[in-house]
Amino acid sequence: MVQNVEEPQARARKTHISAVVIAMLNKLPLPDKLVKNKEIEQKNQERRLKSLNHSLDPQMYPAAGSPEASLITLVSEDLEELRKPSVFDRFKSLLTNDWFSSLSDEMAKKRSDASVEKRHMVLSGRMQAAERAVGVPFSVNFSQVRILEKTDISHPLPIHFFTNKNLRYITENLGTLPLIKANPLDDSSKPTRILDVAKICAERFGPELSISCAEWTEAAKNYRIFQVDRDEDGPDGNYAVWLKQHLAFFENLEDRIKSFRAWLPLEIELRLKYRTVAEPFVNGIYYVEYMQRRATFTLEQRFLEHHRSPRPQSQGANSFTPRRGQTFPSTSICSPSTSTTPATSRFHPFPSGNRKSQLPPCCLLCSGRGHAADTHASDKGPATFPNGARTWACICNGRLSTSSGRSICIHYNIRGGSSCSHGDSPDQALHVCSFCGSTSHHAFAWHCRSRPSA
Image 1 (cartoon, helix red, strand yellow):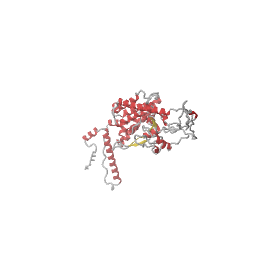
Image 2 (cartoon, rainbow, N blue to C red):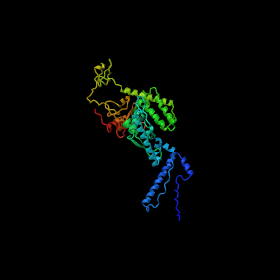
Image 3 (tube, rainbow, N blue to C red):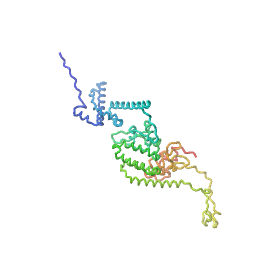
Image 4 (cartoon, rainbow, N blue to C red):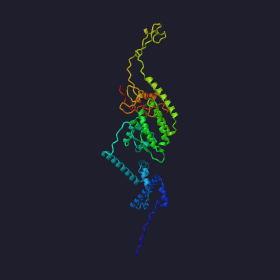
């Protein structure tokens, strides 16, 4: 007698339910496939957990999980696209766990194999090690330093981050650079971690206004490459074209080295302004702005030089030598006598007194003894404290300023807030410590630095 054998029922499809649906799934762009697969993976995990709970305690969990759904198939073109480092970094959060592990291991193996092969080629003589040549610019693959792009989106990167020296420091110390959390750009995204630009400037690179003309020229070339690579429209995009014209204007100035301190704040101001107001480049407007800044800077420098010039020494602290034949009338404050004899016979200078000699001045920029802050205006490099660290403030257009160009109140830093009445409005000098930037004390309170000895 032949027994009837029940054939197993075919599993009901949940993803590829029909030929029409399969065709639609295949036409989906790669990002949409990844999003859909991520949703399916999460639901499958819930089904597995439900089945596990049912197996462990059927009474508490009487219903088992339904069969798992299949994922959307990624064709070879999709996988080749995901193997690109830039695409993988962009979509790795959307990959399923299996695909993420598989692609990560594959890419790590390729990097390892390439490194070993390159080393073998150098050791075997098939490839010569690169020689350093004077004048050859330092090159960096910005796609491998994604933290720069993430930071520039939320916080504009200062241009001196792109000098060869600073780029080399960033690439060699990626794992130890200080980071901060940045607010999400939209409601759907999570906060991201970016470079702590203020801390890096304070501890390592110094203020943006402290760089030299040669450093700016070097950094401008790397900065242009970095921004053009990020432009979605490439070198012909609006921002790429504007940035090329903007930087070329300052690079081609006839007296750009001599007037560097005059136009550097203008270059920074216009570059940051374009992030909020994308105005087209107009050479005439740039030239007028530049001539105004240069004229103002020249007048300020002449004023400083006039006040720094040594004054002729007199014979005594309070002595006076009259011109030959000069006489004083009876109302002279020097003598009550009514005679008209020459002043030299009856002029008595005031006594010099016995006050103690005053200490040499103390610099509000570097805390050093024996000079004033304005003497740093002629420095070729950034100012430093006596211990070698870069100063928090800088001299910009002859003024004591922050790295962003805001003036710092000198009276406040000498005597504290009680000596100043202008307040701290945006158009006035800041009431911050010129040594550390704190608003809780002034510089000569000596809270953040040690008072220099006499």
